[in-house]
Image 1 (tube, rainbow, N blue to C red):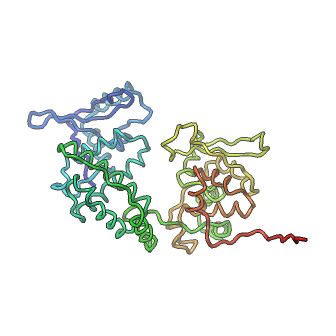
Image 2 (image 1 turned 90 degrees about the vertical axis):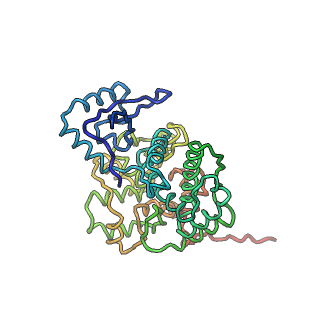
Image 3 (image 1 turned 60 degrees about the horizontal axis):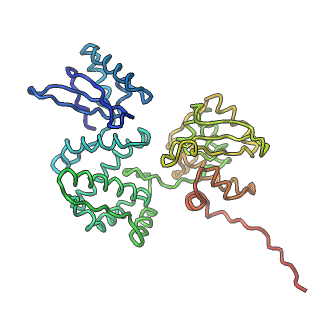
Length: 389
C-alpha cells in the first residue's frame, strides 16, 4: 500500500462541502515556498481521533488539538494512518498519482455508503486499472466502442455478473472524471447483456478453489443444524452463538455483527400476530429511506426462543471462514451458510415463500429463488385425483 504522505511539520484544517452538510479533513504544508493542501482519506479519520458523528465545530476543535500536539506524537498518528487503505496507482504513467488522488477525493465526497463500501471501491479500482492495461484501452473515449473487449476480459477472469456490473459502473465514473479533466467526450459503457452476460455468468460458475483475488464471493454450501451441532465442540461458545444467530435468523454476516449495537435491532411482541418478532436494520440498503430499511422476522421455531438471550448477552463473535471450512470438512461452506439454509429450513416448516423472502430482506422473490433456494431438495404435495362421474 502507498503511504499517506503527511509530514509532522504541517497543520490540519477542516473544510466544509458546498452544501455545508459534510466536513472534510485536510493537511497543509509549505514545500519550496509553495502552499500544498492535501485531503486526508476519510477511511483514516478515526486514526486522527475524528468521529463520523462530529459536527463541523467539533471537527475544527479536534483539528486544533492535533495542531497543538508535539512533533513526536504527531509522527505517531501519521504512522498509524500510513497503514490504512487508499487508492493506488498501479502505473504512474498511465494513472498519474495526482489524478488518482483527486479521483479518490471525488469518490469520498460522493460516498453515501459506509467506510467499508468506500474500501471496496478502492479494491474495484485496482481491478479496473489491470483490466484497462491488459485490454490496452487507455483512452476513455474508446471504452464504449471497444466494450466487447471488456466483457471478454471479465469472462476470462471469471468474476460474477453482479460484480461485473459494479466494475463497469466504477469504470464509467473514472471515464467521466478523465473526460472532464482532458476536455474529451465520454459515452458510458453499457452493462453486459444477452450473450455476453451469459458468457460471464457461465464462466464464473467454472471457478474453482478459494481464489478471491478479485473479491468475488462464491456460493456457500448450506450450514444446517446438524453441521452446527457437529462443530460445536471444536469452536468457541461465542463463535457457536454467532453461527446460531445466522442460521436461525437467516442473516447476512454484517447483520449478525450489527446486533452488538442496540440501535440496529428491536425485540418485541407483535400483538396482531400474537408472536415474538425481531426487527433488524439493514444498513446495506442505501437506496431507500431509513425507515424502510427494517425487516421483521417472526420467531416461530423453538430454536429461536434463546435468540433474545444470546443477543442481550453480547457473547457472539464472527468466526473465520477457514475455521468453518476446517471443522465442517466442507471447503465451500462460508459465513453465508446459515442464510443459505434458512429458506429451505422455513419451507420444510411449511412457511410461505413470499414471507420467507421478506424475512431475508429481499425486495422480490426472484432474488430469493435465484440465490438461496436449494435445487437439490425435491418438494411436492400429493395429488388427490377426484373421480369424475
